[in-house]
Length: 318
Figure 1 (cartoon, one colour):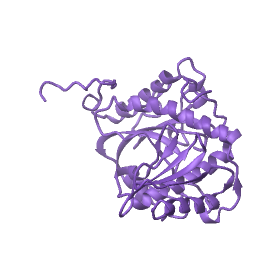
Figure 2: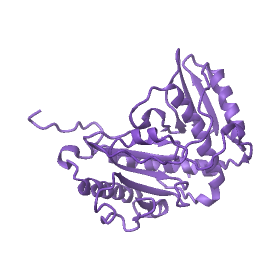
Figure 3: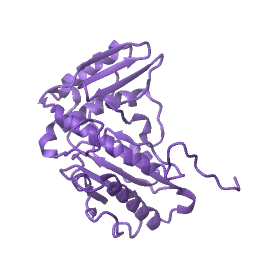
Figure 4: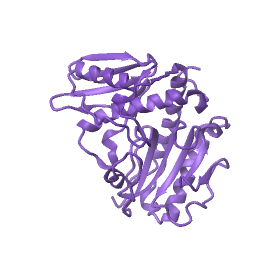
C-alpha cells in the first residue's frame, strides 16, 4: 500500500506493542526538548508534536540564539535534527534502548547548535523508568510504524475537516506525547471547575492549566490508551449531566464508564464502507452530546464546514 492511496491500514496493537512503546518514549524525549525551550502556551500546546507527510516533527524550537527542529522520518526511518544555519544531524531509527536513543538525540541536537536539555523521566506512564536508566533493548518494526503513520494521515484529514466547523476556540490537530494521542479540542469559552489532578507522573498544575476551561475533546490512541487496541475517543470536561447516556454515532461507539469517554474502535472505522464519514459522525455526535448537555452557545460557536478557497460568510451586522 502506497502512502498516497485511500486505504486505512490495519493496526493490530499486539503485533507492534513493544515498538509502539519505544516510539512513545522516544517521542517524549523530542517533546521534552521542545518543552524545555518554548514559552508556555495555553493547555501545553507549545510542547506537542505535529504530523508531516513523512512522520512527526516538533516544528520550530526557539533556542536563545537560533531555531532547531526535530523530526521522526518514517520513510527513511531516521531521527533528524536541523538547525537554522542549514546544519543537519541524523541517526537511524532501529532496535535500541531508550537510553541509547536519548544519548543519540542529545548528540544530534548539539551537533546542529542546540542545547539538549530536557526533563529526564517519562510523563503520564505509571512506574516509568528514567530515560537514561532504561537500558532494555526495544524492537523497531518498520512496517508497523509505516502503517501507523498512514493511519495518522487519514485521521488528520478528518480531524482537520471537523475543526473547521467551529467559530470558537479550537486547538490545532496535534500529538500529545505524554499520552501519545492525536487530538483536537473545542472550547465552550467558559471556565471549568478546578481539575482534581492525579494524572500519573504529571504535575497537578499542568493538568489544571490544561483543563482550565470547558472542553469537548476527541482523539486517537494507537492502542496505549488503556483499552489494548487502536481506538478513537471523545470526552467532555467537566462531564455534564446526561452526557454518558447520549445516543451517538456510529453504532459501534459506546461510553466507557471507567475512562468516562465515548470510544470507537479504529477497526470499526477502517472496515466500514466510508471510514472518513463514519469517523466524522463520531466526532460530530459526541461533540453534540457535550455541547447540548453542557448548555454551550451552539449558535454562536458553530459554522459551516470549511472548504478550500471559500471564506466563511460574515453576518451583515459585522
